[in-house]
Image 1: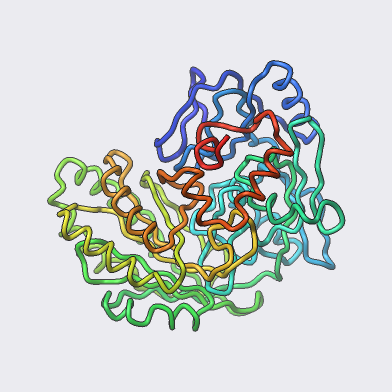
Image 2: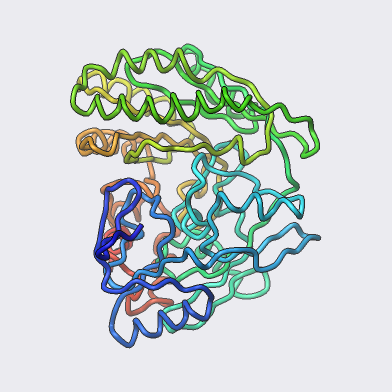
Length: 437
């Protein structure tokens, strides 16, 4: 978000910048004109959505294009169940836009504040070993390129570019439209259960393959795994939503208000973290309900934090998690935020963290007022040694030389970036670090 006085900072307060110019284009033509004007002034351009990336991927030192006015449905192909959206449409608005057509997105992450362009450009994903990240739902896009022209990429035009453009890191141009392959609207039967952590870990891969969507959370300093298992049901299946009062107590009072107060206190007095974590796993994570898919996939996160997430080959999940547990014990850290574990299908997108392999994700967090450096760097070393790839929108320290080792199509992507943006109009310090000059 942009503050009075012109400073922009992200939601996690991990990066900030004072752009030379801020524009709010409301159409594709307005984006084109903004790029052309920036080119004449010799300024770099960066499109910005909701600022929910924790890395510097959206930092705009030159011209910041705020896409908040570039929203809504462009067209719907009912027969093929495809919807074209303007790039600034926030994820939380999409279910309502799709509802009149009886459609839904096939999968979602657990936060829906991002724009559709921001979510696919950073590799946002949900969970489910047979479901890819949000970018795998992209079947077409329109990109405003460095020369101020519009490039259409779909199954009829420039098809060979789709695996790059669908997850383009903001390095290839400014997305103005995104076409999604949707599915018929569906509901999810959700079962949230606490269980012994060792038992959860022992059956992890089996539960992942047996479930439509499976994930678990672990609060350090406890021996409990909070599991979430979601089963897909037809859209007309009976719904049994959580009672409004119970949901408010669990998701707003306990998970946001009380938890936020404890995190703030733990930043000053770390010793309160272990007993609170043990209390938290007794009070939350035990419920069963059936509801519209997006209302199960996503949740409100009101407590500000910073995050690092690594993608691993599924077979490396248990060794990496065990090493993470041992690390926290050895260092004596007091970690108030849970560790999150999810899974996803392999895909063929050039810069996808799940490229070519069934993938497990381990995410670590710290309260935004706590310094995450020591924790994140030590965890990063564990993940790297086990084949890890960092989430593009979350904090990490890797550069192009190391990332090239992990992405078979890395040089192809860089060559396309060089062709579409030879003058680096869309580059910023983060992209320079991860893609190189």
